[in-house]
Image 1 (cartoon, rainbow, N blue to C red):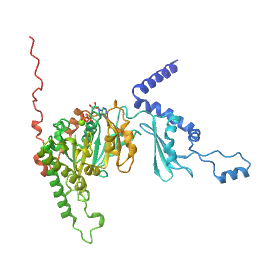
Image 2: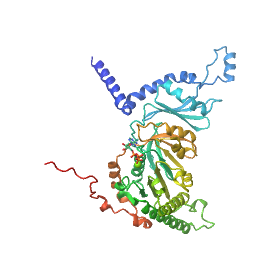
Image 3: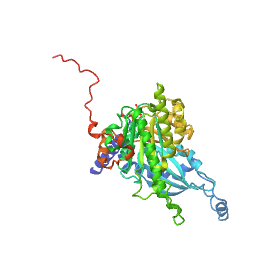
Image 4: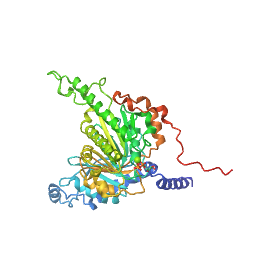
Length: 450
Ligand SMILES: Nc1ncnc2c1ncn2[C@@H]1O[C@H](COP(=O)(O)OP(=O)(O)OP(=O)(O)O)[C@@H](O)[C@H]1O
Ligand SMILES: [Mg+2]
């Protein structure tokens, strides 16, 4: 009787968890059922999905000589089978005659056959393919794993649809562009980046032409901030000056003589000894179009200088440890000359929901054409979902965790002591004491009826 009650209770708990908290359901229950299902059905599913090959000739001859039944077709051999926080991981050794594309094109069939939420595949090395299966929609309620890689300038910023962590690695992809329609989740993505960067030894520089509403609350972790195009121009020109100073420093540290090994010749800040190395700078620009729009002749001159400074930073900044992170709703040639040249330097592309194909083309048209379709298909009711691609042509769907402004402010305040002073940018350091303005109400208070 007690046994029956306990089983009944377990079933009820499992059903409720599966419905309300799929991530909690997965670890004790989902993973057990899924692992059993895959282990039992593996051979027949592979056969049904067209992923088996006929037996080798020598096996056929051997069977014929021994008068044994004809051997069955063979599925890829399982090299590794591992449950993960969000699904299962299967590493397969392909049989002769199979290729990674066979597996990629069968992922949807495998998903249905194994009863999983999603299946993706990637080639690990020649002849070895990894299948990542997810047991539930991991992007529905994003929970980042507690343990992520900790490397300098590599920020775990979002979760990928296959359950792995999406990193923004500034040392491999120095500059990034994030596009998306209004309310699509760009600023939340950028906020996650800032919260991740806050714990690193890096100077943060922000340009937020929405009068600073997104970045100024995080000011205690920022070494320089600008909230209008005029200040932004001065700030960018100061950054170009800083970049030139860093190059002078690298040159003076180079000292190429015959006894210096090749690997020790400094060509960027990371080759310099730690005590000489200037702090890397990440420049975050929100609503970039504001910097490129103009109405008068003077504003046009300012715009040209801003775009020129940005292009110079994008072209030359990497070795000086200056990285650009640009956000906007659109970023195409209609914003005037220099914009497509700047865009070409921004390797890391992320597109949130866009309203039309041309906006998606601005992010992926020149690097990953199939990502354009994926970006257009992002539904309107799940803000934060994005498609992220890079210049290798690969892309993936990601979603950042929903970090509120309050959480980001707390993280930035906790790491405020890490905020470095960049002498060239001293004039733009936000005055933190004056950051809590007693803003006058925009609407008049309703007259008292008393
Ligand atoms: N990753 C996410 N998870 C859950 N909700 C999100 C996520 N990202 C954004 N949202 C929701 O969408 C709203 C709009 O997000 P956000 O302010 O980042 O959009 P935006 O693209 O910057 O818009 P705008 O162009 O108007 O500045 C947020 O207030 C938040 O409620
Ligand atoms: Mg925004």
